[in-house]
Image 1: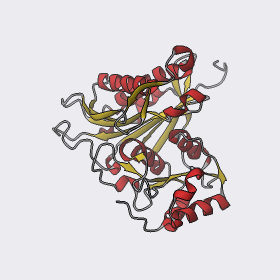
Image 2: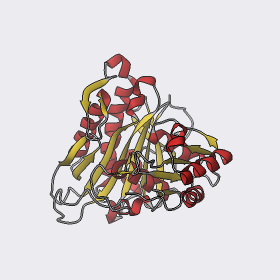
Image 3: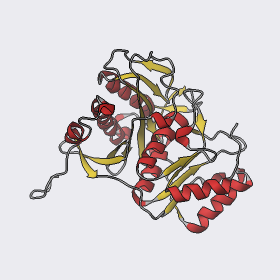
Image 4: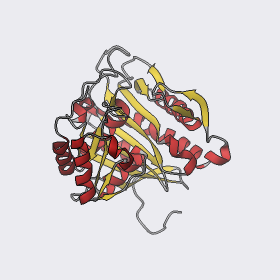
Length: 330
């Protein structure tokens, strides 16, 4: 319900129309972000109606990650491929649910490449826990062939990143260099409104987010890092990466999912989970590391590459990495 007599926040469309005007780095970026917002509204409706609409459950298939595919995974992937393709600005799409690159177009207008996790945390759908969507956006160089090596570029070459949380409200967060803006979907008008302008991580870290059930699987330095965090901060762990990240961005915190002997390269995906959220964190004053190096400096070798991830308040990330030390990533 609109509150009369109060100034209304700027809409996402208004923000896009003015915020990046005159900066050639962002030519056409507004079309990409608007397409993501359109897709997010469609997915939000499906998430809210999941039980009633018959879209809870699995397809019976296994994706390229070796994970059981949820019905909403497929719906989200199809939706975002559709809206991003129709934006007229995206040359190619990498997706968690699709083994190979989706090639869209190679005209001069197709000036961006998008890597996406269309529905992060989908295993939590049937228990009504917050889930989300994550997007990394890279520029395509003039005349750069599609796909070529377009999708195997480090996170430090991203021009923007976006994520969406579908929870008690639907929130879209968009980041470009030195700017992180949060928008909340107003159900009555179907518009995203600017509710969290100029987001910065709070100076004080309040929480740590980690799967403590994995503690005994970890090497000694990483167990020490866990114990240090446990003795200093309160545990908050949803189990949906995007939801844990969003809470920590607003309240201050660190998320960590390190490697272990069974998964030395970690379990999260570099290109469409760690890179986009690492980019958002850095623009908000935070940091992201694999435990060995800055996430955004990792040169990817494959589309679905995995990585350990430590992300959040910069000082706490740095301290945690210093405790873990030289844990070799093979």
